[in-house]
Amino acid sequence: MAVREILQYGDKRLSTICEPIKEINKDVLDIIQDLKDTLYDGTGIGLAAPQIGILKRVILIDLRSGGEPIILINPEIVEASGSECDYEGCLSYIGYEGEVVRPTKVVVEGLNEKGERIAYTAKELLARAFCHEIDHLDGILYMSRAESMYEVVEEDEEE
Image (cartoon, rainbow, N blue to C red):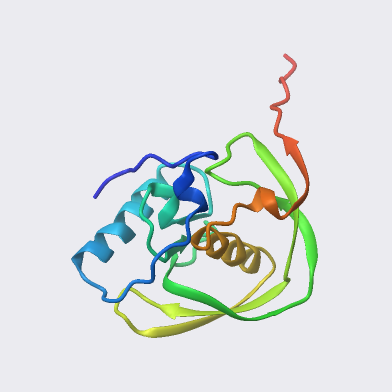
């Protein structure tokens, strides 16, 4: 469909709680395609519908490790365990990273593109990505959870 503009920190839509999807129809499938087009146009590993200005509960995660992308509609974390502090970044806050404490393991349930109930048990980076993207659906940006924030500075290559 289309590569959409990714909303940036300060846009009020990023702090809005998103509406659940009641029916999977062409509009929802179009949102999913726009999420894919937009994510694959850049370098991130996840994207939530509110980041492209659509206040609906849909996320896309692709760790870019050769596996299938994960698309979840109305996702919910139903179980979480462990705890780890690690770095996170966000396509809606380019140029910064923060240290965020997240669970090391989560169980996430939601619907796939066909409307089938599906569950994922995720560990480490995938668990972190689920937490980060689901936070977007609740209007929460990772910076509000960060223990510290850093500006990402590119080092000059010496010739």
